[in-house]
Amino acid sequence: MNVAESIGQSLAELGLTRVFGVVGSGNFHVTNALVASGARYVAARHECGATTMADAYARMSGQVAAVTLHQGCGLTNAMTGITEAAKSRTPLLILAAEATNRQSNFFVDQHSLATAVGAHSLRLGSPETAVADAIHAYELARDQHRTVVLNLPLDVQNAPAPGADELGDGHGHGHGHGHGANVSAAVTTTSAARAGSPTSSESAASPPDVTALADLLAAAQRPVIIAGRGARHARAELLDLAEACGALLATSAVARGMFAGSPWSLDVSGGFATPTVAELVSDADVIAAFGCSLNMWTTRHGTLFGPDTAVAQVDIDPGAIGRHHPVGHRLVGDAARIAEATARQLWDRSDVTRGYRSEDVQHRLQQGLRWRDVPYEDWSSGSAENARIDPRTLTIALDDLLPAQRVVSVDSGNFMGYPSMYLAVPDEYGFCFTQAFQSVGLGLATAIGAALAQPDRLPVAALGDGGALMAAAEFETVHRLGLPMLAIVYNDDAYGAEVHHFAGGEPLDTITFPETDIAAVAAGYGWQAATVRHRADLESVRTWLEGPPRQPLLLDAKVASPRGAWWLEEAFRGH
Image 1: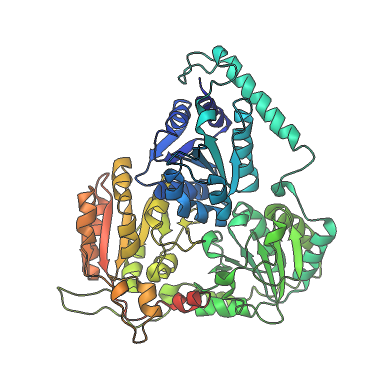
Image 2: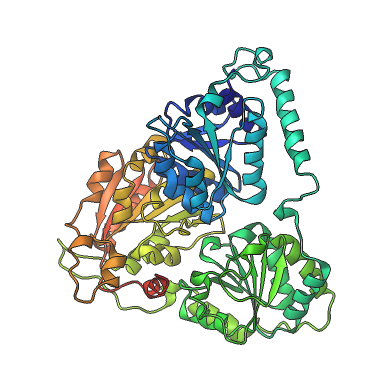
């Protein structure tokens, strides 16, 4: 057994069950060892796709996922996906083979590449420390919600594993006592090295901080709680806290669905909010954010909250508090623990106002919570042969057709608000939104990872034409895996965000394209496919849903886009 095989076995024994990648010479052995030890491997067609699949899988499963990459070009191909994951603090382990010989054509400074985009970079030190180094990287990803790039130098990988003569035949069939003892010793060593330094997830605000938050919420007339992805594990505690103080409940975009089913849910705060929701958030006298960065999207560039609104922020990362928006009350700790402790104090008090849960607010939410209930002028136009369908009309019709148990994944682009806000989702694990880096082209791979994490739900990929064509190689991955996916391509034959941003007389030839038959592209990869120009064309979806186990289905929706989406004006304020 060599070091690469030892690492693969060790990580699988720790609980790494899902691995994505593109295999080359440098990650061949570690990948095979992971598979031989029980991990399930998904071969992507591009390293960026593999990394984005792993990112989405981790988000939608709550587990650490891994990516294995070839040295040099394998890592550089994956960098956009790694950047997205790092900015989102996804618990992700990147196993990157590394050429340390500067004369190698595969040599690049992999450590600097990783740190430049916000990932945590580690390296196997020696054959003797390799297993402990790998365990440390896995624990860092798991316990601190970090994207960790573990560089695997080729010479260290190929060295014999210490004690290999005790470990059977070295091909993944000999999980003997010797190997288990090595893993246990490594776990003990890495744990002991950090003894007395609890992870950030174990920290909690002090009782005076919790009391101050309870005082703030008890006196609030119109409190709103906003939860981010860092609080998805705290749904029950936040529902109880909101009940204790009469708060309304909202989420950031990435945590959408977390409070689905609550009559006091505002859905998403920020640029995606309906006018009714935006008004209710703006009128709040107290905002309590849990695991939510309060970035420009959630706060509409700081304009959504009133000038006199008191803001409290809870996060396990002290550096995240106040980074994007001024905060008057800072609480460092786990969202669930702080919410539970605060609610306990509020339930014991008799001076809680409970002011925002009124019949008037309930009526306003019933009338204006959902975008589909907001009147609009239908943009659908054109004759039968060249008709264009309004993206809102298209998405509302799909929302009515599709089963409630769905997992919706959305790419970036002018279209993205339509599936994000017109398609309902069942809970916080029904919406996957890889938008921290705003890269076009991640949506299809996102949908693959989300589908594997939530196999009992219908996977829905919402893509623009630009992103669909960027990621077209992964159409084959969907077909090969047998995923019953519905992909909707909002096709305006352009990079629509730029078209509307620069529509002031400048030439647009660089960002518009001839009409492309994306349905034919998907069919070439083995998908069923249909072109949609009218509502009646969605009968193909009904037939597909009612049929037996099926191929994936792509809708090449020729959408009307006479003006930018409502959220686009908000987005470009930050550019």
